[in-house]
Length: 375
Image (cartoon, rainbow, N blue to C red; front, side):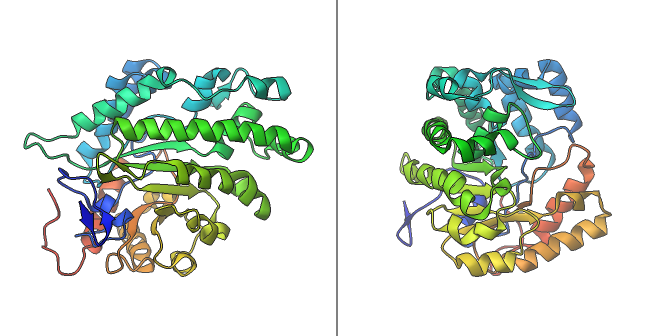
């Protein structure tokens, strides 16, 4: 189906405002979802994780992944679901041995450090990531209501090649990224080969998610902001641009939009827009007016409330949400998805999210639409 020459969002949705916003079409209200919306701030998530026995047990079991994906939707009036998984599934499937250490975060048993390590890297087989695709399909089915309509769209995602490479080479999270930056300056050819195979892996990974039922996909470039200005374009953005060009633009005749989020990426907004991406995620340090001026209306914008605002009073949360919506001129100007500027903190009071979502929907109601939001 076409809309002004462009493919329409998926049919059969009770609420398609998120997809419409990504395509810069009018919406009845400003759509809202939250990065890391299924997480440790929710007591029901904590209980399910306890049943699963570990984070990886949770992420690698489709029944559990489906359960925790739906938990925030059952509690809050959100406009999109996001697949519950982890950005490090791809390098784990490459054989690097992912583990989560309590209090220290993710670590790889076999980090990539030299020519022999890079030479071993291959695009993972789809069977090695079958649990992700099975969870995607299962979540899509679980989102269908009794009347046959799907509640909200489902977002798939991956880490960006640069961000994955940071973990693959450092072996864990890092403050200064000394190991990967040493490779970047001493053996750029080696890093380029690693990024090339990782980019191919991400293309296949996201394509498989789309084929399994993801209705939009997002690249999390968590560590892109750690790069110098020109280095970002070479080592991060160029590879994300290749992914955007290679991804399917539609599935079963329905448009599948994509999003790039670079934490600390405010300096490169215009460059990101030139990749042809449908939407750019903004962190909380970026002025929405500056972002809109940089990209015009060639792509949608997503963001960008400071996650720490959710520790404020209800009045403060409402005021900060209104500031963000006003800065984006949302919903009068199509093409804004409300989100946090980074993932929600595990210490966030759950009731604060209720206040935020209600505030966004109350303030961000489009002119000329009925007073009630989609069911």
